[in-house]
Image (cartoon, rainbow, N blue to C red):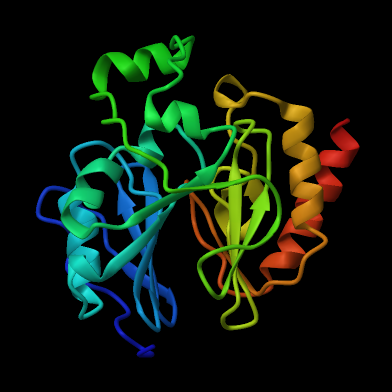
Length: 246
C-alpha cells in the first residue's frame, strides 16, 4: 500500500466538499451530508458505503485520486441499508465488479427482498431522494470477527438499524469505521443518530459501550467529523455519558 497518497484534493465540481486522507490510504469522501470511504489495500481498493443515489462519480473520483482505477475496487462494505449509505452501490458494482458485504439482517432491504414502508422523516427523504437501486449481496455477515477482507474485523453494532455493522481496520493503531453507530461532532465530542431514524436506542447505547471496550486510534463516521487521535477515549467518554442518560 502506498502511503501519503494525498492530503486534500480538489472539491467536486457540483459540491463544495473536499475529499481528504484521514490516515494513510483511508480517504474520506463527503457526499452532501453523508460520508463514504475508500481504503487502499495491498490488492486494490475497498469502499465503505457509497453515499447518496446519483453520486457514484464522486466516489470514482476519490478512487482515481488514490492512483487506482475503479476496476480495482474489489469489495464494498455496507454499514446498513439506509438510502444515503447504499445509494451508489449498484452503479459502483457495475463499474467495478466489486463484491458486496452486509449483515444478514439488513441484506433483504438492500437486495429488495423486503420492502419497508417509509415513516416519519424517512417518508420525507423518500419524496426528494431517488430510491436506491437494489443490488445482490455476495457475503452476509452474522456476527463479529474476521471475514473475507484481510485486515478488517466485522463488528455487529445494532441500534441505528438491526443489522448495522461497524468495521475495524488494522492500520495505524486501528481505524474504526463506525457508520451511524455514532456521529462525529465538534471538538471530538460524539453524538447519537437522531431518534427518528434509529430503530432501537437501547441497542444503540449497548453497541457504543461495546465499541468503547476496543482499542483504536482513529474513528470515522457516516455523518460528522472524523477523529484521527485517541478516538477510543472519545468513545469511552461517550459511552459513560449515555449510561448516565439511562
